[in-house]
Image (cartoon, rainbow, N blue to C red):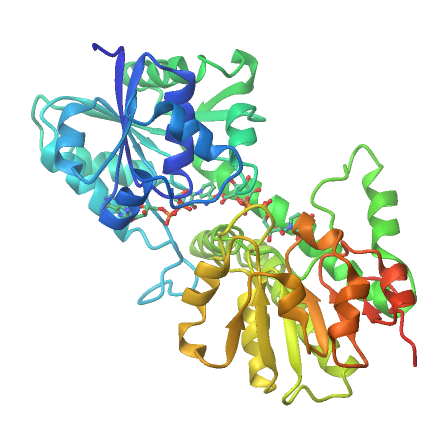
Length: 458
Ligand code: NAD
Ligand code: UGA
């Protein structure tokens, strides 16, 4: 069958897989290929056990795979045969050399640019889907257009705004699609070619265009703003705990102001995920690079408060449990960084587990989808942590439960049944404020919500 467009995506991760599956689903007239250097990941995408848990994704992959969606390790062939190339490789925080712990590590991205140059035998549109520092497109264009021959490259910025756990909904109904391009004849033509893809299902008024640098910066700033709201409400949750105010009531009252809005105002154990921290640190690095130290300090405080919230949660547990956790068994309800995903990258649960182990507690972890990743995150702690799928079994014999992920399944558990099997006094630390605190208190638990007065029996 002859397809109208041939699209390649380099990087079959949390972004590459779902975004390309959605394009293939909405555009049966296009052939979409996703390649990756990781053969295990590609094999999983080609199996019944796809590598990412994301509600609705399995169905879309099933409908498109082998029809117009293909997963492969043939990067060279992919680059050669496709004219539109999305790049969605990982861009983690640099762990070495200049900018370590702050700047984006661009090694994967640069390798990809060089591969594109090496294997291209015709002109291409190259689209930055990964989140990248401002001016990365310029560097990419320099690499790609280094050798002057008949093959030319137009680089576009088209950042992805999906959130994990709701990726399919976000991709199907995005708030906006952002496309940044160079203001040249070929840059504008490339933008039109990309716009045509999204126009298959996204209303035209939701497709925003900008210059390429604004597009790159907008992505990082969007994440910084979202994270800033969470740190703001988490900072206030600490004050609520000191003043007997209730963070849910404060958040509701504040969020009802239409200028503020109600989203991203749920107090928690802190934000996790692979991007918020990394993107803010990248913003901080960029500001310092341009001599804007006050601006950098402002954004850095968002990450600092997030760390504080995780440490505060751990110390609250220690204080409430008579200042010693040695040999006490603590069950963690949830290890994923948020509900509806198996992803544990930068999950507050990782830090909290390690801190509780430092206090010599015994840890049992339960999570509906993230146990595989949790085990990988804690390989160096083998023998000190156990993993139990069933929350009732996991809590048996424990002194305390800490709710770290807002999985729906934890809202409606039979807490009487759980209480009956636990060591007394039994405590619940609700890092997500998702359970009925009064009911649990009436059952007999000492209950420690986040940003609300504790309900204790002594
Ligand atoms: P990921 O680690 O899940 O996936 C990246 C993939 O790229 C990996 O499978 C890796 O093997 C592959 N890769 C690396 N170098 C390669 C190369 N040279 N050739 C082929 N494949 C290569 O990362 P992710 O979560 O999908 O994030 C990708 C980018 O998207 C990041 O910049 C991230 O900031 C951004 N982003 C992520 C999300 C999210 O929800 N995870 C949302 C929006 C934007
Ligand atoms: C976030 C953004 O929401 C996406 O727009 C962006 O594309 C993505 O980062 C990215 O660039 O990777 P994601 O990290 O997947 O998406 O998930 P969010 O729903 O934003 O949650 C992030 C963290 O904040 C989670 O740990 C969540 O539990 C926490 N959170 C969220 C709160 O603690 N309180 C809230 O009110 C909302």
